[in-house]
Image (tube, rainbow, N blue to C red; front, top):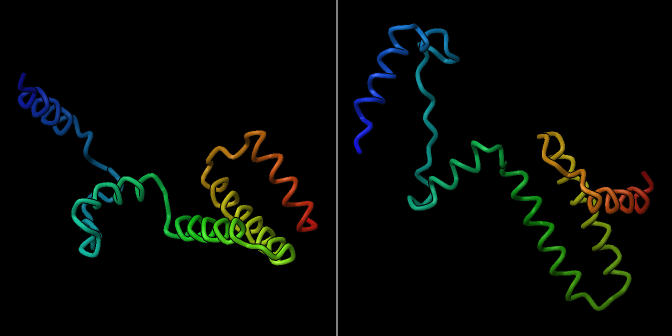
Length: 124
């Protein structure tokens, strides 16, 4: 079934009713983002993540957390392992702070319990 004519009719009526006037950015040029450095097959996923508010900083912090977790698993020295755990806790606290600023749900009992442990370890 072809809905093209129905869609075009709705757009035409909205335009005639003035629903496209006074929109944010009305009359201003579009700011096009350069995505030439992103492989074509990943561009849509990149745009979805970006539009959802996923930032490069979050990506970097998550990457650092995963690296530290790998180091903890392979570490044999208890003192070094404890230092790595402190670094991981700091990164996790920072990540949760970024997520809570965006309104992401980090209020589960798991996060609350872990957050209390982090605060205790960091003396906050």
